[in-house]
Length: 389
Image 1 (cartoon, rainbow, N blue to C red):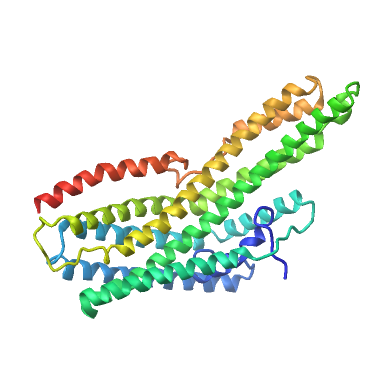
Image 2: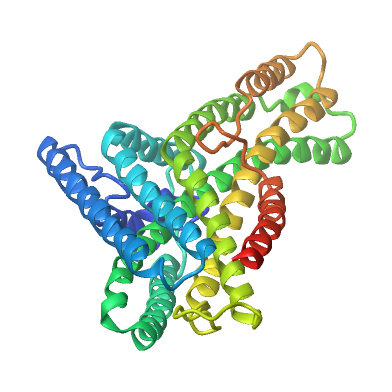
């Protein structure tokens, strides 16, 4: 069996794609129209189950938990249910209505990999993706299992039943962001490779000039390499646009869910350690907030990596422009090579390639700092509300 290298062959992700098709995160990539119609019915069924399951959760939270919980806990719980529901529904709808985009997205990855690898199949020793998927499943099952035990022992079946569907909902959200994580990682790797081609061509020119000072440098032009990089950049820019279309909403909703989840965690922790609060029948202790702590850590890891990978894509795109300018200084001003470098730099400037979250904001590491700023601001509001109630 061939295990593909994640940096150079998109087929490395195919095991994750197979799982994602079952969760309606990615549509089936076969061309058969019958499978596409079946997937639409399957997706609509999945959406109906998601809506009904989360409506049941919302009903239990409003009817049974309002008398025994703080108002801040109820409000944050409702917002979190709505946010996670919207993320699952939007993820499924994007997959259902963008099947052609998905097929083009994967085929363009294959084409670029084929060109960059010059037709060779890059392999690695082990299928690390399967190990990663299994590891995350074990971690998630342990988190869900412990939380289910705590909820059942604390509230009994009457209230525990309303929390059952949240495990399915959060599992779907985690798998969705895992898919985004791997495709963002793949985009970054391809941008780094085309920039590596430009840098190596410049290094080769310098080495030749040092070894053979009297050699005419125009004899060693890199015209074909620059033409290839221009083509690769155009394809990668198109891939980034499709990435924004397919994953922008997921990143947006995951950011909002993460903020609300961290606020709920902070609120529960405040209630657990504040012994001056009027006691209620709701259990606010370290056992009941373990689920929020563990799941928040998982989501923070994925979200931070996605943000950093997307920022790397933006930086590598700008780095292409910087390398072009550096190469223009090293070549003959009247050479065809310089003209092609100017064309490449114009392409980079014109396309202005960058990742964004559904057009709301560009994705970079400042997003992480803004999340913590929001948490600090809203935590003050939570403290005030908890003191007044």
